[in-house]
Length: 210
Ligand SMILES: Cc1cc2nc3c(=O)[nH]c(=O)nc-3n(C[C@H](O)[C@H](O)[C@H](O)COP(=O)(O)O)c2cc1C
Image (cartoon, rainbow, N blue to C red; front, side, top):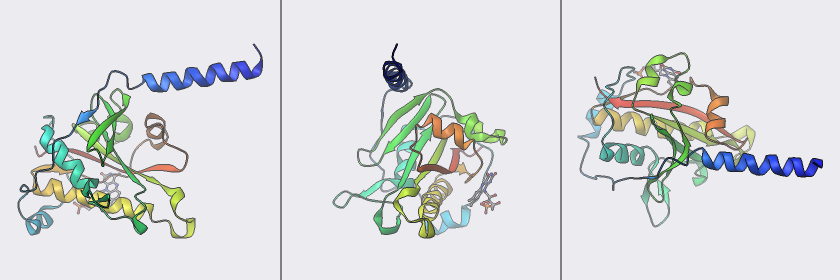
């Protein structure tokens, strides 16, 4: 086979394989955020803490829906703005959800989890911290570092707002979480098929309090 034919065969087989990786997973249609839940904000501040033990009970769909919406959902449909601010409204942060079934991208506009990869990759997020692989979900905060100049790159800062939203939602709703920089970043980039300029910044194992 000529080199160009070999290249094209490999390229298209690779594309098909990547497409097949999430074939068994369906999108998770999330429920509308419940505006009236979640106690009071001062109590949430009081109870915000890093917790590393989780019940293995699966999150109810309403809780998962509200959690990702609180983290980085669309709260102003008219402008497409989000629950977490971003410098110059660049919206360079993407949230992914890892479950025992697979990895999903949170589409904030449609409020849907779109399948990205089938399989349990929570151990790749946990790295040496085994407790993190046991949480029923793990939220991964990814930043696109190409949207800002290197000397003023706000992606890390913007990731922090999403992280704090997750902490406060959990504190107000009997859930446990911890922000973690620890993870096998190369493997996660591969699983999520990230572009070179995208980086996983933090991950948050989340479960009900044990
Ligand atoms: C940017 C960042 C990275 C962190 N990475 C980890 C981590 O990899 N593993 C971990 O167990 N905790 C991690 N933590 C949690 C801190 O250890 C924790 O916030 C700190 O001990 C203070 O405890 P508190 O959150 O309960 O106030 C991280 C926190 C932040 C803000």
